[in-house]
Amino acid sequence: MGIPSLLLIALGLSPDCFAVALSGSTTVKSASRLPMFRLALAFGLFQAGMPVLGWLAGRTVVSLIAAYDHWVAFALLVLIGSRMVWEFFHDEAQEKRTDITRGAMLLGLAVATSVDALAMGLVFAFTGVSLLLACPIIGVIAFSMTITGYMLGKKAGAYLGKYAEFAGGIILIAIGLRILLSHLL
Image (cartoon, rainbow, N blue to C red; front, side, top):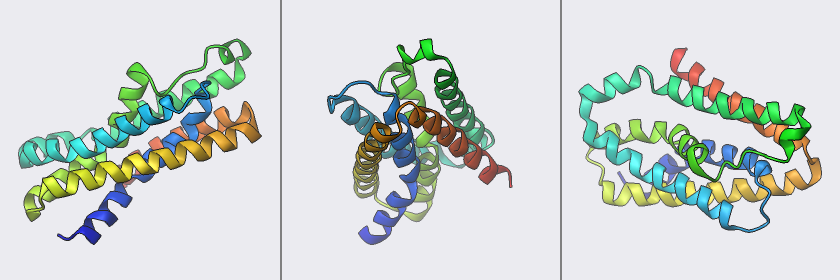
């Protein structure tokens, strides 16, 4: 598989990173770029690392994981999105917004957005794709898409105010539903 194909695969794996960064950036108070780079680095590393895990897992383990991976991604995204919507309706929570670029929230989102990359690792194993070539491409594209989504989300958040957090929560819930429905239907 050539570089153009790998670039297309990487672009196909990265929309969730873009959408989560777009919607989640509204919850970050800091004007610094550090949270943006923290999110992009986590998403890029998980997107790059998950194909390795998928490749190593082989057919038997992947068939077990495939039975519930969409449920995990769905649950994480709906939980985080619901919390953002809840915070919109509770003014006291506005002072303590959820920062998606730290701790368990960051880890949960990094896992949820990279589940498809795990499955792609199995495809790479069966097609003989070089992980040394594929994984860095996937990671760099995910990193770039996360930065782009984050910056656009910050701009939108400045215009939409606190409604951007509500919209962000709804977007995360919608992504979770899309993941679940794409596996169930």
